[in-house]
Length: 391
Image (tube, rainbow, N blue to C red; front, side, top):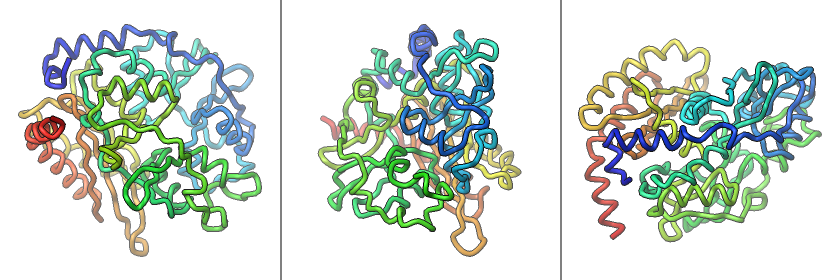
């Protein structure tokens, strides 16, 4: 099935059936770590480092309480090693052994999480992870005809080799991601820095506050001295099935995409989850806005209204399957807030990426969705250009 064939609803239905024909039991992780509500965060970070899990079930007296998430720690900025787990409980959705795989993908996208607990009553049977869904993607023959360039995220946020450790954490916090590629001055990728490097080189027991970089010389560690230099890449013209297989075999959550030696994009497990999510049978477009801080949520209704207006125009060209937007906020001048919004639309088998920055949240959102609409208008011409280039 080629990308053009994704316009054929019967073929989408076939792909959906293949995915949902796989059971939770086939990807269930039964050997998983857990913590208790009274455990300290220093112990939790140790468990995360040793296990590789970024969401860990909280279990008290055999009963599921919730999850403790690396992302929650990252956003809090002021979590001390003695902070109790019960103060950072994340109430993520739970699964059963009968939950459809496309539904799991939808829940992971909606909540931007990496693991979800599978319950029987209040007992945790196991964990389903993004990696498990990547394994499913690697088995889908239909993905062999979808090119990496059609799904990859571009442009890529990256670090130079002379950047510092706090630069990596800043990008991770701002974009809510966990890995960042490292390039040299010739734009050749030379490494990857992830949460493992952050924990190993900064969040040690002697720190009084996790993430308090400004008070620690640890922040001044050069990225090139701590990043992983074992980097596996994929060519931008490769197929998604092969890319997913590389990620499964190497247990990579992130796969840089190159054209020759130049870094041109990135494929993550999240991109694959979005692809599976887009196959879910639903009556309406799936729209998700994440990253809104509490005092900005009052603007959500206006944001969704502007999105709906532009989607009506887009749908006359192609029918979009999903739109994921992430909002970052920072103070550029004194107390004045500046917004950065990243949007990813999955439409007609292709991921469209766009970014907009501005002082007004509503205007920035409107500008972004308009930009995405313009990109959809030009998509056919862009596809033709890419295919001619590959030939």
